[in-house]
Length: 266
Image (cartoon, rainbow, N blue to C red):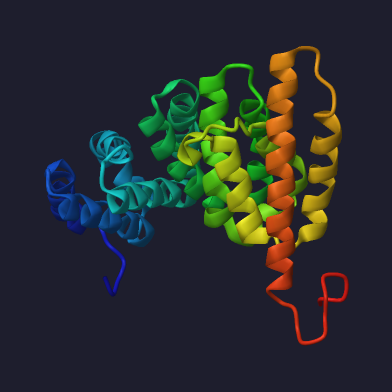
């Protein structure tokens, strides 16, 4: 589009997008979600798009669990765009639904909701995003394994979606990621390890000073356990934490110049 979209143009465009989101073809759903996001940014008056949300949003929600990753990503970005152009609607309708899926949804629903919430947090006012971090931290340390998994999946997606905007929250959230490690043989099933690895890969060489306190605190916190089962789990967390610390060292050494070592690398 080369100009803003008025209400009349929107009334012609939206039925086409709705039909595209209903199609079984993944390309149609991906393009429709993509165009909806662009359209939301270009309407002359954002109020004119509200009447269509009742039809569009449920289909975007369904697209978050689509088997095609590109459809999921575009649907997630559409939720981020809604946060940018209609923050009140997002706060009242979008975010409660997404957080609900993180807490109570199946694994596929949790994965889709985590992608969407990461995009929402990226577009959200920074002060408002900071207010949500305690809730995310509590969710990642919840006693219920299903709830904990959902929020750890969110923490896996946040670093790559938010990029440097995630830096202020590393000190608070990284310990929860490490403590969420389960040691599951299937790496994809260990949401804590996935989230921790994602963070280390993204920020290991950019701000290692923010990561070291979490490694130290988690290692100390897992030295003693009341039962054999707890001690075994804590041993797993320590082992994986040491492995991840090694990955931080590897990231730093990627910048090593001739004649330098770990301590002298810029």
